[in-house]
Length: 95
Length: 481
Image (cartoon, rainbow over all chains, first blue to last red; front, side, top):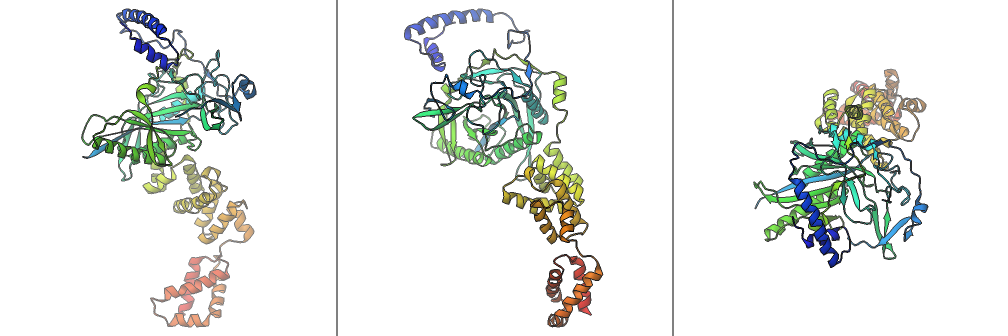
């Protein structure tokens, strides 16, 4: 299976990763090899096997509905680049 | 050309939990910004989500109430997109294995026709935070209190054919979640939001047209207007030779129009995959039995019972079962009051009017259902007339006590002692010789109207306490003599 460089660029954009032309070329080759391996594995008959959602054979533990977290805003906002009136400030979002 | 509208709704309802779906932070509405956003909600490295049992229980309750399949095994996925109010860069949701499978709800259209609307699925997910676009020195403010709030997204089949139908369905879901106590359904606070998928196709065509998704509509009125606008826009576009593109559109209630937000092709590539931080959720019989053990009577069942037990019309029964609180109130008042007709009239009349005027809902009525039933009872047994009851009701509303206490304290008990009423009647007749003369000389058919004067005088003299029926009878008798 071959993987197109434009697909790498699209995925990089969706993930907001800055990938240079050179890197994109390498990634295209790497990802193609991974997908080739997937293509090999796809030939295995898995019709009787249930799809796995998680590698661990365990199920989700459930938490009691209790408020256990106290307000740590001052502490949390110490590492924020900009805050005001209790809000985190980010570059303006234009919808 | 004849066009057919096709609508499907995605309803996001906030689940009534104390803490978030994956963290122990509080979910109280209106808290100071970011005081309810802990490290998990902020998406800090190294933290792990742990699923809230109550959110799962509420989802199971809803699924059971609409007769849907409850999935014994469900899986959480990551829905990836970038937005500043989504700190992790993904929303935890459920794609392939939602907790609630197909179910259905019945709606009653305006002409009384019953229609089944399919519910494709309902899945658990977390809410995002809130962006405040007011000017913070050219920056956007982010409040993450809402991030991680548990939501149940209820997805319908494209089974609705008009904006009105969509509103009836949305109201039905709203009624169900509120009856169950699964959500407070508060639309102003964002606890109940609708997205509408709207398309049009030539009438008779099987294949669906291209749909536009209308986002984040937070009132039933706007839902109807947004869909109507969108349907017109699409028909006009196609008839002018254009083509509807699949996209997300935002309804602007100020301008009453929808406009394009972003093209779906790119923005909707969410690259879902199973969240490795969360294990599959497996529910056993005990969990499900426990979740549905105290499922309340559902609105449709209750409406039918009100019709049968109280002999109410479908209209009255539907109104009175509109919310669980109203239905409870009516049922208590009618049971204590012992008179259905009076209870219906007074709950929908005097009480509703007073609540409306004060801007209160039934749950915060200053007159409790028990007290109200006490008032109905005293009207039903003729202790007081309807007119006096209004006075008693006002006193109850101001917190002066129960109906009986007010009636006693103010001496409002209706005079049914015929001797006492007769004395007043005699006095009125003696004081009005001219009117008596006129009455006696008048034609028989004019007399009933003229009787009103005497009734008014007697009621005035008795301060409204004389039993009106007895007054009428006595007056007729004495005046004819």
